[in-house]
Length: 387
Image (cartoon, rainbow, N blue to C red; front, side, top):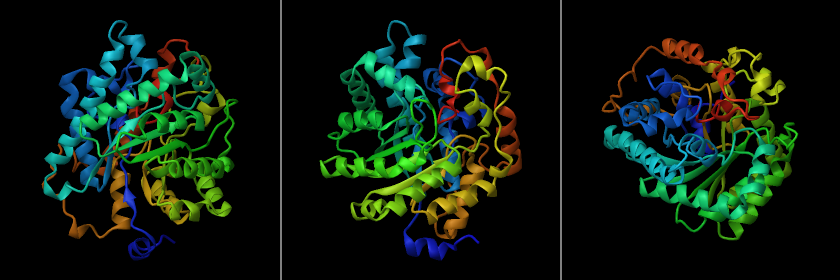
C-alpha cells in the first residue's frame, strides 16, 4: 500500500525531480544524432524552443527541480565533432542549456518561481563505463578533468543554475574530481552515482553504497557544499538496494544529521540485453531496440518511487524512459496540487494524452548504436539524460 501524502509530508517533504530530457526532445522534433546526442538541440538554435517546451512540460507535471539539457556536452563527444573549437564550445553550449531551463521556469509564471534549475555535470567520458572513465582520467590527467568540471560549473552558474547536479558518475574517483573542481563556486552540489555502482569489470555492486556515503560525509566535513547524495540511471532494484544498504549501515541517519538528502531516479528502460553485451557497440548490434520495461510504465515506476522514499530518499524523479506522465502521477500521489496551480504554464503539448506520450516514448527508442562507430562505449545511447 502506498503511503498517503500526509505520511509523506510528516516524514519529510519530497522534492520531485524531472525525467528524461533527451528522449522527450527527440519525440518533440530534435533529430536523432549518434555523434552529438541530446546536445544537437543546443548546437542548433532552431531547436532551442523544443528544449524550453520540454522543461515546461516537466514543470507543468509537478517537477520542483529541472535539470539542464547539457548531459552530452563533454570532451569525449565534442572533440570528435568539433575538431578545432570543441574546448571553446563546451562552456558556450553549457551556458545556453542553463539559460533555456531558466527561460522555461520564467515562462511558467510566478507559480513556478520555487522551481530550482539544477545544472548538469555529466560523466566526463562515457556513461556506465567505469573502466573507460578510469582510463580517460589516467590518460588526460586529473588536473585536466578538474578543469573541465570547473569550466562547465562556472558556465552553468553564469546561465542561471541554482545548484549543480553531477549525475550518472561512474566511480568515486570521478565524483571526487567533481567535488574538488566545484566546491568553492558557491553553489549547492548534488552528487549522483550510477545506481548499480558497477566496478571496472561492469559488475553491479550496490551493496557498496555505504562506502560512498562515508566519503560524501568526509567531503562535507572538509567544506564541500554537498546537498544530496543520489543514485540514478540504473534499474530500480539496484537503486533500492543501494538506499537500503545505506539505511541498514546507519549512514542514512548520519547523512540526515549532516543535512545531506538522498536522491533516487531510476532508468525505466529494459536494459538486460545491453548489460549482457557489456555496453559494447559491436556486441550491441544484435541486442535489439531498447524499450521501456512493461512493469515500469506509468504507475509501475511510480510505485518504485514510493519504495525509494520509504527507503530514505527525499528527492525523487526519473531517468531514461521516464516522461512527464510518470512525473505528474508521482506528484499527484505526494502532494495536494490544488494549492500550486500551474495553469499559466502552457508548453505546447503539455496537455497531450498520457497514453499517447507513453506510446511515442516507447516507439521512439531506436537501435542507433548499431550504426555508430566501433568505439567500445555506447556513448550517448548509454541511456541517461542524453536519452
